[in-house]
Image (cartoon, rainbow, N blue to C red; front, side, top):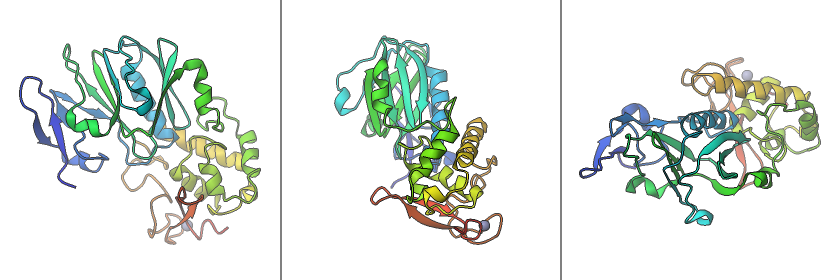
Amino acid sequence: MGPRTAQRRNTHGPVRWVPLPRVLHGLCQGDALPAGRVAGHKLRRVLSRLVPEGDFVRRVVKRLDQVLTGAPLTYTLLRWPTLGGVDLTGLTVTAIDAFGKHILMHLSDARTLRTHLRMDGTYYIEHADAGRPARDSRAQRWTSRAVLVTNEWTVIGHRLGMADLVRTRDVRRLIGHLGPDIMADGFDPISTGEAIAAQGERAIGATLLDQTVVAGIGTIYLAEGLFEWGVRPDRASDAVPDPAGLLQYIRELLWRSVRARTGTATGDTRRGFTTLAHGREHQPCRRCRTPITVCRVGTPPLDRPAFYCPQCQPD
Ligand SMILES: [Zn+2]
């Protein structure tokens, strides 16, 4: 992989390539993605080094809402097999919200654009020159799946894992298979805790990742929640003490992360201190100094890593 570069947009001359600021090198997930200063305006990206979980999606939604909601779309492009030729120009985004890890952009014509970041998806937000709205560049086209432009902002969805446009009243059809959103208002940890126990001998790590049981948890909060609970990720779901309390705890971690300056499962935003167990294989547990280890939960090829401390989470 060559040096990462950013494309300087210049509609009056040849395209120029400029180096990305060093700080962004580790944060971009692909080559040739725009960053740095574009047309005199700093490109804003919703940053995270973490695979999207409920807190990250809420953070993305908050930022998208700030720049898109209420302003007419002056240019749109959807690069998705089922959305070819769809033009949303002239419509207005009336509201943006999230369900689990799904992002729902509600439009003024009673339709909703549903996208999902999956593992690698990212939204870039770029300030457009007044009267000269930016377009996505040739270099970006390889990965951009949705381009939404207003007079002031350009939003580009890269490497999106899903994109659908449906009538707003039919959104439930897209997300109806999901369990309760752990971050939603009115989330009921008691009934969802019962649903977890009903999974029986299935590993609790796999159950927490199953979005049809509870939506919004990924490998980070699975690990952090079970660490606090002293429960190994491969323990049977019906053997976990107080699953409702566990869900409530994870929910509080997620919302604290949304409110923090940057995403964090511990409340500490310093690099290397944002988790107690996740991503810390072979590093000493912060409580007992035993090396953190990792197992796999779920059924291959969809199995995922689950980090834990063998001493603090004995069974
Ligand atoms: Zn420990």
